[in-house]
Image 1 (cartoon, helix red, strand yellow):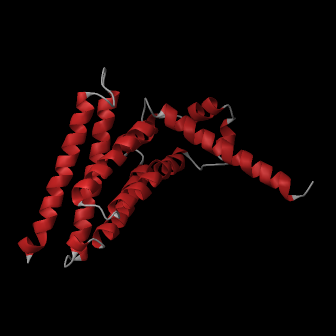
Image 2 (cartoon, helix red, strand yellow; image 1 turned 60 degrees about the horizontal axis):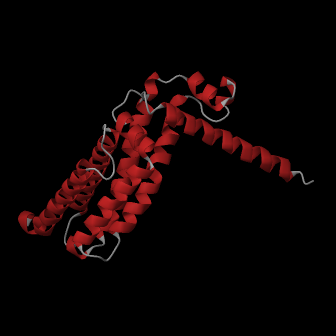
Image 3 (tube, rainbow, N blue to C red; image 1 turned 180 degrees about the vertical axis):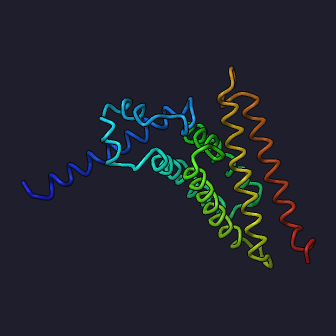
Length: 218
């Protein structure tokens, strides 16, 4: 047996335990905020001693920051790919709303965590969410800047537009989540379809304003 194999096995086990702690915390956060959750609750759910927690995270704040990264990372790449499409504005809008719908269906706990903790009581997590959304806006701005309709726009205005898009996406995700959490409602309900229609109209309004913005400020 090679000397590297035991190290690899230990590292894999450590990673599994770390992920188990994240998953357990996310499950517990379905019903409470991070600031009210106890470390022992998390370790008890995983079945490890409280001391084992500190092999992976300094405190619950650091665990929360890791959850922020886990919650938003995949959404970044997907939305960026949609904005980079060569399709028309209407098709991009439809694709963008569909991406947010699918993300809420597949990751409701992650969306709920971000919605609750964005203005929650743990400063490190609030800052991490703000930082991730800022990075998201930077990525969206780069995609928008490359589109012909942005020709002649200042970097400041493109950034402002990107922040509008990101804010709408976050609010739309929260609206879908509110519907899915409602009694008798779900992804095929009229309320869900109404959220999708409103989101498309809002993005269309932004798109129309975008087409005329350069002339308005010239």
